[in-house]
Image (cartoon, rainbow, N blue to C red):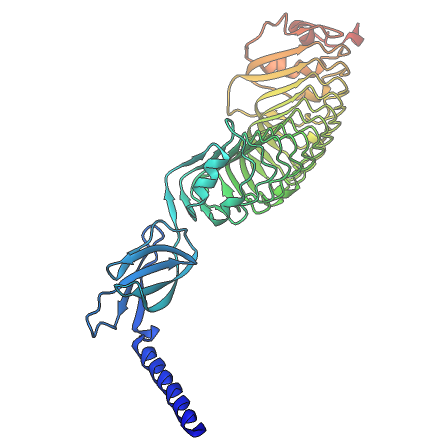
Length: 466
């Protein structure tokens, strides 16, 4: 009896094993479903699959997963085109084949990497929501300008720009509450004609994540109250038009610009903590330069290799500037204006300045004691209508430094220099000038001594001679 029961139990077990194997054999192996990636364009990525298990002409449907998300089900076909994907991103998922009863027949995985995704045209983002919506699309390249303008709404972070790696146009970051530019550090400002503009960002403390840039049309960093340095711009070599650094009261130096070798114009204005111009050492020739309203600037050091300025060289309203140290190699300029520098006591570092095209203006420098430094200047013949203005310099006593000056036509004004009583340095100029665009009897006034043109020519050029 016991043997009979044992045989019976063995037979039952063998029956179930046999059934199990039979059912297993009914499920085709996953290798019977193969996937081909037919497009990796992020705007219309596409996959195709082939199911070789059609021997019984089964009706088959497919479910499609992207990552862990089911994005399409009950597909009656063997292709799928994805909705817009991010660029330069790896995607993976799986295709599941199911029968008419929604029972899984087989499945296989797929993986692909999308191409670069490009946006054609300009992008203007006016809010944090605008930024988040745009960056969610995963663009890698913008073929146009990127303008981030938070004037109407707070913009607090650019972190979601991490997919962006190239801007083929301008970059504007204006009127935001950003503390930094984090998110743009993997981006390159690719066009040498681009403008890089960072203006009126009241909370911005650093720009270390600024896009990589070697050449731009213009660089304007203005009105950023907490910005302490220009770190991030260390690769910048060329500015085709204007470098403008202004109204950034916390910036103490320009050291990061040490690789800059050319800028057409430079405007350094209203940076209250800036003490020198170190960082501009590679600049040798320039069209126009303005150094103005930098209340902590003490010298012009940083411009020691500058040799020529094609148009205007303006040094104005720099309260602590006590000398022009740093300008010893300057040899030529069309015009030089030294105005209202309250601590400036000498201009002797201009002694190599030999050519001026049309204007010298030295005005409102209350501690300037001498014009020594401009004694070697020759007004060139390139332009007519020369100008010489020496005004409101209460410590100057003599014009001896300009005793070799001469030009054929122009304007002269020597006024409001309360200690100036020696005008003998004007004799040669008044002798040789042929066209006087000034009143000979009133171009000198409010000085310690005020001779007429005739007085100077007749040896009455100094009060000491009476």
